[in-house]
Image 1 (cartoon, rainbow over the protein chains, first blue to last red):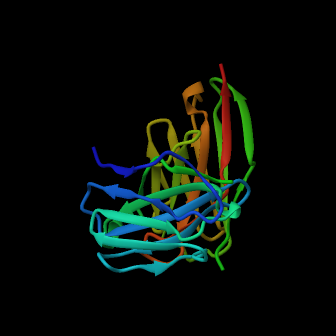
Image 2: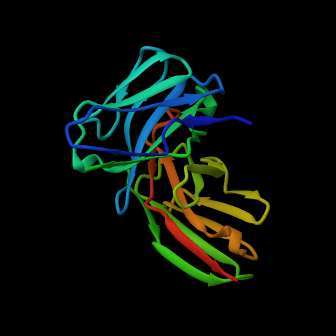
Image 3: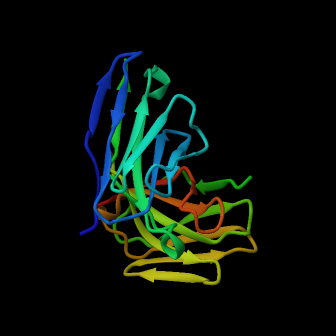
Length: 114
Length: 113
């Protein structure tokens, strides 16, 4: 069964802390994505990557960075967490070409910044 | 800029009812449209994907239709069950085959026993 695993389901951090959200997929997918989901705003794309070492900004990249050192792993980094980054973070992956839009999502990481 | 809207935001029905969830999009030049299901506190599961050349897709008790010209899609759930209770989201690609999706805000469905 294909899987996207997000290492932390729930995190509580303090303002100013550095936060790492890890995502690993076992499907050999080239494409990986980070979305955040907020009530009333839906899902919004933060960053995505189509290959190792490659990254592109999504719609709301401010305050975030990403790392893709290995094909299976895509990390989201909050350099200095702020309260407005309290949210549900969803990682997803897909294969390129005709399957690019068929995303497999992880279970999500709910981050609370105090 | 593409916008995706889902109405209603919430829906409560008794078990056994047939129901329709609505999704509308502003730019009809879509590559495809997907319906997802999200259980509380969980990730999204893809239910159905309709290519732009298709009119509908079926999976079990679910049927999704697509009318590009009017910018609308519907998800029909037959003989609803309490296990269908979840949030249903529709999404379209921001451009062709990129995996970058634009989501509606979802319809939260409650099916009462």
